[in-house]
Every structure is written in structure tokens, then in C-alpha cells.
Image 1 (cartoon, rainbow, N blue to C red):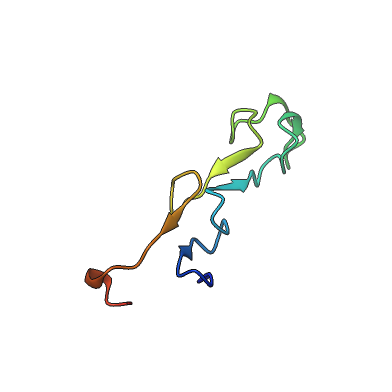
Image 2: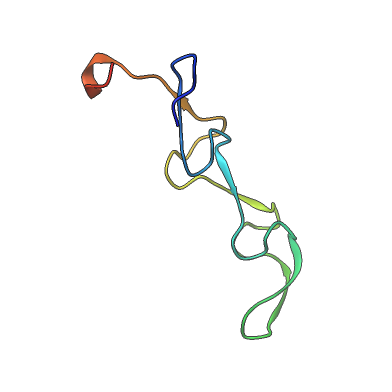
Length: 72
């Protein structure tokens, strides 16, 4: 998504840099898996509730176009 001030934000995370954990949906602890196994801590996000965005892999991701990427 391109902002009015010219910034380009990562689309999957909307520039936040993180995504809600798909496994625990942000619940973090006492997670029940599809096989009915209960985890005290989410094995996917390590009980944080969110994961780094897999596309940009940074917190507060904002990139600016330059001449090298052909979009100016």
C-alpha cells in the first residue's frame, strides 16, 4: 500500500512488522492443537502472541522507493 506521503508499507503486515500468530491467535498460553494436544506455551510464537512478518522481517517496516527499483 502506498501512502499519501510517498511511503510504501508492507502489505501483509500493513507496516507494523508483525502478524498475529496463526497457531494461537494471540492467546499465547494453554493452546489446544488440532490433535487435541495442549501446549502451556505456544510452540510457534514462544508465547509472544505474534510473529515477525515473513515478507519484511522487521519491526515498523517502511521502505522508500529509489531509482534502483524502477518505481519513482
